Image (cartoon, rainbow, N blue to C red; front, top):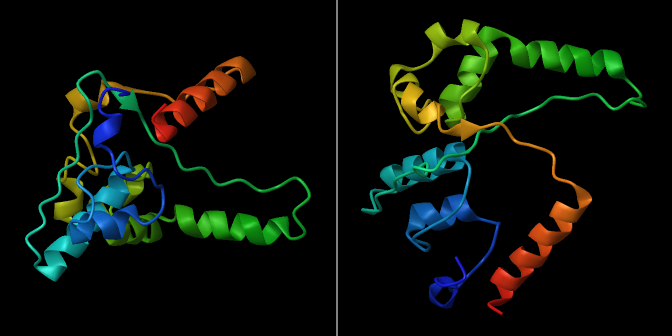
Length: 157
């Protein structure tokens, strides 16, 4: 990637949805649901911006959202209520339909909009899913190496 660094004008992790939708950036490394949202906004704006999402042939990590309750939460019973609400099939389908992120609640599948369920950006095909790996924990040494490489890339040095 260091070879393409001179062609990169901006490295920023804020505002990618709007920047994509407006055509202000041409490439991002981002979440598929964010790209779905940008694609939807561009279509609504009728600005001619065409947005595609690609999982590399070599694969990528898959994405996981987690709900957790801190050990010292002052009202854990309310947290359980929220989690139970969010896991309701109707609620989960509504969320996926609204924001374009897949969910792991199989009971919500029949409630998803056909356009959401059939969108390979949201729900990749089985052969694409085979190229996705679970996220893994890096060692402190790996974390430092990643940080050094990322800083080198960001600064172009």
